[in-house]
Image (cartoon, rainbow, N blue to C red; front, side, top):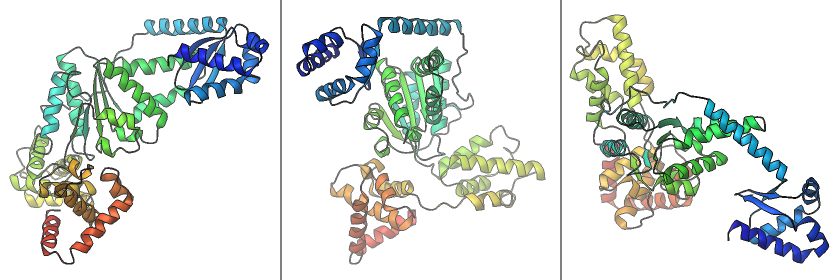
Length: 451
């Protein structure tokens, strides 16, 4: 039902519930200005109408609108003079905005680009997808949703896309984090009501909706910020409808962001969700060689040292870089002619001892089980119940239960948002079966060795 038709229907129902004299005085000359998700704005003839409608007839208006729409609206009553005054304020804000010339800040790190992004099997699909988006922003894979655990190169890849687009076009690029987006949006409510608040709100919307490429890092931190999620939804819609490119990262897949609004999660899958896995041994070695370039020790490090660092940093690129920095600092202090394996072990022993050991994580177990059965992690998280998927899923849940300290709710959440009772049933099924199934026991032993 259109808004004007709805308003006429409301007035008709009200006219049937009150006397014709009362209707003629207080309702006959009302005009609808606007309706949004929360508020109905109604123009009244005189200021006295505002007072009477607010105090005497507000319940009647609320009940009638709710009976027709199922929505509890708030009501704002304005006179013609109020509307003229608001227009003047809006015009002034727009004029002031035109007079202010602001240098655009992309927030991009120019040192993060495709040339120094090291590619291996664990990130090849994400890299190729990122290159495609950078070369044709807004045309394919929109949004591009990159997910994977912290410290494996998502942020580097996002900056690389932004820097490539900036270098090869005149498109307006903006990189931000979900925390910054949330904090800036929250700033609107902190402004004094009136011109300043409208100015801040307009500046916020112009910043995020008048761009060609919006890059948002760590979207998972919008969990719990319901109003910010609503604003991001409207920002997403405004950009997507104009074929503007949106790039998002998260530490988990769209399906696993259960506390993000459903309408947002569904839109995250419109383009291409692509995951990045922790780097394998060969990729870790390549990353170490890349980060040793242009350093004072690049010619002093032999293969044994590189492989030692690769083994000491099994899952996290940031840990690799931190270890290299530790080696650089120790070398600058001790000034050896050659960095031997013994020297490297001495240089980073404290750092490695603190940071190297990591217990099996849910994501690591999922990856190992998926690789073992030649399926994908997404298969394990899916709703599919075929035996070639269900059996590995039960095994993965069982291993997560016995090999990690995560609780049942957390395990269920990481397997596509399943209930903890489902995890219990899966674990019990495997626990009972291994009593009499040697093949399953051998299978579990082999998978554990890969962990």
